[in-house]
Length: 119
Image (tube, rainbow, N blue to C red; front, side):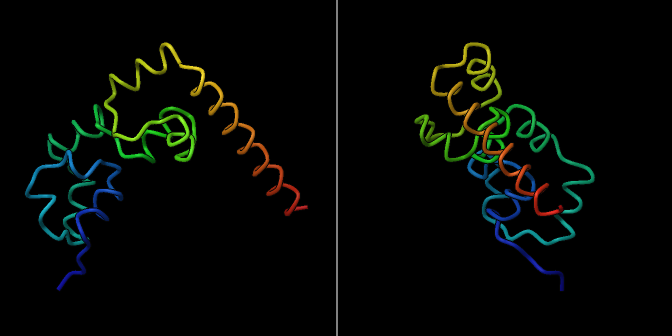
């Protein structure tokens, strides 16, 4: 018997927002083999979610170039679609510009720390 995972875990591994997935996917445990099959040959619904969203917080944060905490500070509480992300990127509000700068500095600090640890 193959090991199974909860739908929320499978959705995270696939980089999709679970509430936007088909009901059957949301209700059923997923085996590792099924997950591998979805990755290898994604069905149309999975391709669509990955392309147009709505996106989960970690994917959304990466698309905007900020942290997940930055999303919260910016008041983004819901999953956004690709069109909504595009609108934010086309005309970034002040909070997004500020969070991008904060995130960039944080990544630079982390890189410097790793470099210092290596000697």
